Every structure is written in structure tokens, then in C-alpha cells.
Length: 266
Image (tube, rainbow, N blue to C red; front, side, top):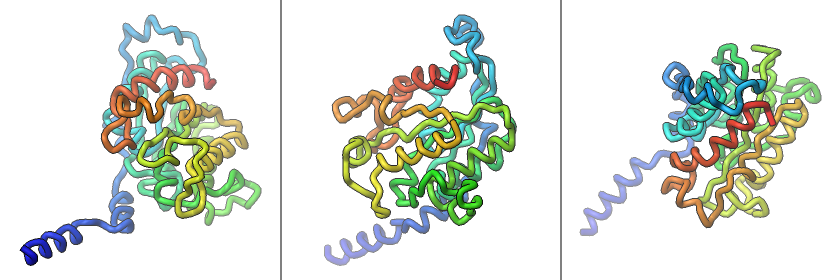
């Protein structure tokens, strides 16, 4: 029995990837926007209360991690398409963050994107949970001479994406969705938690930094963390068993809030 247990333990150790191996794998992933295009139901779009709003009938591109691209997220994005009469294309990739060190980053996603009317930067939890440096709103801005060494921070990545998208289409509307809550730890859903990651920052500090970067550039922000309407009392209804990814009901809950925001950027 001891020998069998030792073999089993060794096998478990062999199949457990290291953080470096996980990141190496995530960096091999790429966007597949051609596989993630949603179009509106014309009957729903025809009677939408958002007809005549600024972004009705526009083409929307979405960048983010798994929360932006998982099949369950289509429950929300189809709402956008229907209510806004919009074509919605997703460039998101699982495991991605704004930091250049986190998976197939939003920086890479933005680099490969075409020209759209509306761009949505959907923040994930990956920069925080993988302890990528948070940075400040000044990272990769005119204030540091667009220092490319700051692209490793969450804030540097956000500022890079905003700049790059403006270069692609100066007339485009850029909107930002903050990170959603997660329930695997107190810090993931409690805005008053003092539980830091390995960089010494709390999840709330990462979200505050997201807002600061957008404030600098005048980019409208949907504060999903505070407007999600999900907490420890009802999260089991809206989250998968991992308590990180929402199920379809979770996206159906946040979808109307997102659509209302995207209709006019507020």
C-alpha cells in the first residue's frame, strides 16, 4: 500500500503544472474574433428602448479575460446586440490581464483588433490573483515618457490599450468595465478587505487604480464590482462552483446594466 501511495503521490506531483508553465501555456493562446461575433435579433432591436441612443446600431469590440469570452458571457452580450441593434465581436482570451506578463494580454488583443465604433475594455481578476504589479495612473503616460518598462503593470497595460485604440480610431467610444467580484476569498468581494496579494495590494486597490487610469483619459467606467448586485448571500445562484466565473444567470443579471451603460456611456 505504501508503494502504491508513493506512486500515486508522484503521479500527482508530475501532473501539477508550475505557475511558470501555466503562464507559458496561456501565452500560446490567441484571440479568435471570427468565432465570437453576435448579431442582433431584428425583432427585438426594432422595439428596443435604446433606439435613437448614441451607440445604437454600432459595431462593438470587447477585450478581456475568460469572464469576457466564456460561452456563458454570450447571455449578456446577446442582450447588448439585441437591445443596441449592434454587432458584438469578442477578442477576449482566458487568463488574460492588462499586464504584459499575464497570459495573452489585452495589449496583444488590442494590437490585433480592427476598427470599430465602440471598444470595451473588460477588466479580469487575473492581474490581481497572479500578483502582477498594480502600478499607478501615470504608468506609460506622457508623465513617464511612455516608459515601456511600465507595461508590466496593470495600469501601464490599461493606458497602453487606451492609447492604441485611440490611434486605431480617434472617433471611437472607449468604455471600461471594472473587475467583477469573485468569492474564493474575502478580498474578492469585500471592498473593505485588507487581504493583499503578493505585491501588497488589495483587490479594491486594483479596481481603484483601474478607475484612476480611466479618469485621466476621460474614459467612462462601469463599476461592475459595486453594481453587480451579487454578494455572499446569493452568489451560489449566479456563479459556477469555482466561485470565480459566473454562470448564465449571473450574466443575465449584469447584462441589462451593461447594455444600459453601453447605450450612451453612462
